[in-house]
Image 1 (spheres, rainbow, N blue to C red):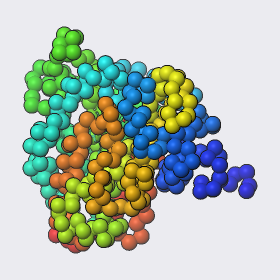
Image 2 (image 1 turned 90 degrees about the horizontal axis):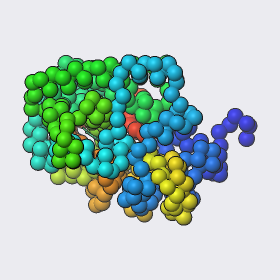
Image 3 (image 1 turned 135 degrees about the vertical axis):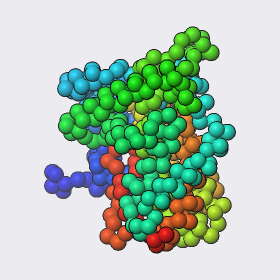
Image 4 (image 1 turned 90 degrees about the vertical axis):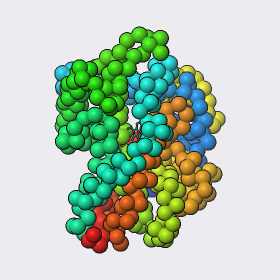
Length: 425
Ligand code: HEM
């Protein structure tokens, strides 16, 4: 092997594999299979990062939030590869400091915000949104049904979740292009592989997001309306023993998470679901023949894609898991995408099967206290949208010559573009 040649992922020793290689991000499954078989808990000697890749071990870690902490943002920043660039810091200083609330917080801080925000996503509230989501889906499809071809992600999948979250937050749909830009900027900051120019651009967009939402916060403070921002601005933390309203740092943190998590993950799930059906004609035929299979298809899509493919934890103390010693401060990657392909939990896990019995036990929404707060909403959007899409975009198929590539992001996985054709309707 020449010095520059890459080791063969199927055969070389695990320590020779760069887990962040763009080729692995494109298709992580051969690497995941080796991790599960050879080292379900694996400390990469090159980075010190501990990967947890089997279903049971991931759940085990998630039942110990006091040991495997979500308060990992500072740790990520202080790592040598992630140290804040002074130019980036200068841009961010024009915005607002943001505090940890949900994803990057531990109890008791996490518990109080989770209680407040979860009111927006109760099962009952989400059930009542079905007709509204259907209307949004139909309106979007009206815009391209006659064309006979489209790029599915940018014409449909991006817009459905973004419209729903913009309406729920109470911000104008007319501003959605900006939300997309800002959401992409947060995603780039979260785990994208980016050069300095991209990072500076992302920082500028984050600051723009903050100023926009501070303005909205002030509007809703003065004139509350029926939406999540108004609810949060006027919510009192008294029940949590802290008699006050939330400040900008808290509100911006929550809105940023709702905007990003509500956008990219659901958009990826809608796009992948369509791709999986188109590329598995037998599964497509089953779903078309029996619409009662839609909920199972939705769960199988979430399992098979795992839009949040990996998620960080940081160890708060010495412990061991799967026989591997964990040190205080260790960065741990929960490999949800791998747990979801674990044959020990999902027989023949590499097969996409809309009738899989235990599909709903997937880890796509995580597990434990940080389980996706808006899972009912994401599920509802998919369950409402797919029957409408299959009804209206007849004989949907991949555009000849289309190649599929996935986002080069460590945390978020999804098909970048899905070019399709269908009979004009
Ligand atoms: C298919 C779509 C979605 C997927 C696959 C997904 C996935 C996830 C996952 C895996 C977590 C847990 C992360 C961890 O283990 O630390 C999470 C948490 C979260 N998600 Fe989602 N999500 C989706 C949609 C949404 C939507 C629509 C929203 C909001 C509108 C949302 C908001 C959040 C928030 C705020 C958290 C943090 C919860 C906490 O830490 O308590 N997600 N999501």
